[in-house]
Length: 384
Ligand code: ADP
Image (tube, rainbow, N blue to C red; front, side, top):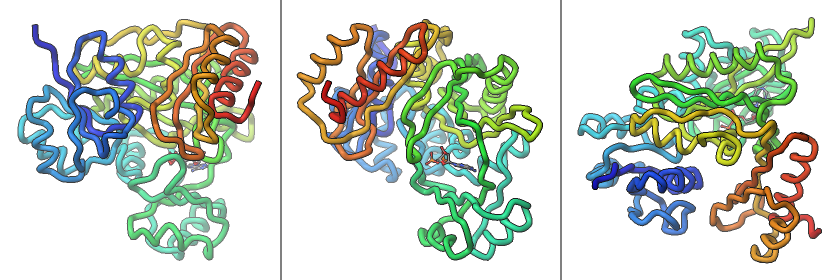
């Protein structure tokens, strides 16, 4: 018997959980990781330690892989093109992935295909920011983002005047200016698309951010009208199709409310890999985002994305003053036999995502409380 070999670039928790989803299929994983301590490097049997920015390293790594996919978006676009030219299937491919790598390219393309986005402009100086603030109507505050390399709110600034606008330009990379959207809440529409064009859409979720980091995800988004939910799913499917995405696509959205009360959606950003807003699917959907990502990159038929419970809530465990995990597990498992714990094996740093818990049931307030308690307990910020 032979089984497909999946090459995964990046050793973070997304690679770890993608690997986990491939185990029941007997898939072989090969991992290119920065260090042996990375989350996925601890569990994948074939690990290459190397720099994903180096083309020779990538080429050597790709030998023997049936397909290459990713834990993150940072592999240089030209290297991905070189791998494709070598005959290695890269999924998602460089022409799609560039839209998740570069926020300027993403905004330009979404505008072209008529997808609603915040007003925006590429700027190169604080004077440009000032012009954008005046000409686009609303004045300050303005949101500035480095077009490449940001994550978890790093690389995003909210500036209230020209004097605050110097910092983002220091890195020497292009900067995207956006209107500051007065959104009601943040949503995410997760879809998966395969090379032969099959696609599935998960229920639209609400993502609650604290200090620019995702804290809780509620599936489905409470109180979201069927009309808006269908519009968000359709929009995500359109983006996946138009951009030729293969694998999981998360479309991060702002839900807005017009002066007359009409709800709307604007796209914040795209991620072309399994995403934090889809972790609930591990225990809350018939087929998880990880299982469907693996199916998609191998061009296998996709699995059912429908929810298994009325409500599923994902609560992130952010690194803090960590206790010994064994007594923490004793407490959490005894308190809530339905709790699903997913820890990433990472070193603890304050504020870093080190795991998450999934809770589910019929009473949303109770499901949220159970998730909050478990995440806080595992983090060590509550003791009973
Ligand atoms: P990252 O790449 O770090 O995830 P995002 O573009 O998602 O960066 O921005 C991080 C957070 O900043 C968002 O989740 C949102 O809360 C806020 N934000 C980003 N863009 C805007 C905007 N145009 N208006 C208002 N808030 C924004």
